Image 1 (spheres, rainbow, N blue to C red):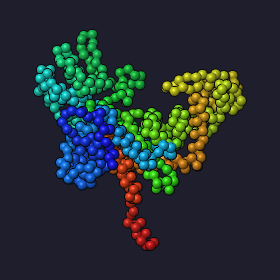
Image 2: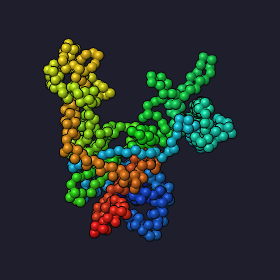
Image 3: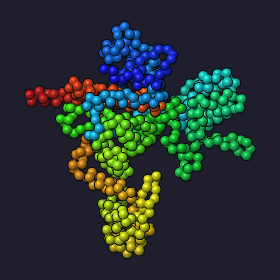
Length: 531
């Protein structure tokens, strides 16, 4: 039967106008396109040439297909109306009806980096390309205005070809001068755009707004008492001042304003972050009756920590009716607030390692760590291993997180014989920083559990998500974004997830392994001799 009905995409298409292709069929074409990792041109040709595609789409042999540009128009409409996740919702609903998906059980989640579909630019290239992109947009929208506002001949020599490091000066002094020249040209262009005699609608061009943002983030402009304009590049400073904005706000390309530079251990990339959630089971007999299927896809800016995404993932799973009983993410998703909040809000037990106590005593495994203190939450008191009771109990908010700072009296700590094992603070007294009661107990319980062999055996189930990420990057090419912007990149990831689910269902229904482990010639010879 039909999987993607046209009515599900009706709000993205007008009632009047020229007749278009079926949106439900276009959605299926995109899924098949991701499954075979094809370009738009190749997908349009496959619709005309491949019998398997024609059969899946319900087309006759005489159907001429469509022009490849229709797919780009379809993506723009779907993204503009917030229907990116519609295909995954429809597939999940159908699989739930057939009993292949259900709430409860176990799921696992992990993230991977995604490289944006733009060229990596350094600060000098970014400034030049921002001016060039604005000029291109203005020339296309108002060529007569550009001819009057700038010297087209001289500007064309500088901004005609793209700004590339191969054509830039090599000396640092000349690069600094060119960077200021780019900024002066940009400010002059914006001054002409915002002049009272210029059409107001020119200011609303996206490329003009991007140029404004790039200049503000990378340069300062001041006017001296003599009326001279001074333009300088912003430099990183420890005390703030004219430093650059934080990474999550900093533009990395004038052509994709959602892409961000980010780093993870020894990896440095410009783009996004992809979070994949799928069902999982450790029982072989269960795996034969229920294949592991992707239940949720989240695409975020590359600078967003994993822990900031977990609540959104749980909410999306709740909307689809697929909340698990146990969730297996890695340590990047785990905080005391999330461990406690997942159980309280969604009824989900997070099976994840948490960061160990980072205090000096805990690291050295010598002396009294926070776990050695007895906490009486109702009375608002803490008792140290020597039997002394805390002197103060102060609720505070640290980085938006409520905590409690517990302090002991110096008169108790100074003469205490255990003071060298407890604290070396200059104030000669011990302090503890605690999360709220239930969160602290959940954190301590998790730290105790993750040291056991049974917990580590159970948590080994999470490692299977690495194979899913490998399949997503190898089969559908999700490591590099096809499109620009967060919305369209998320759309690509959703359609890739649907394609992976169909590939897995096909392999499971036909009892075929998804991948074969390579066997060396020497191993084959060993098997032959053994036989």
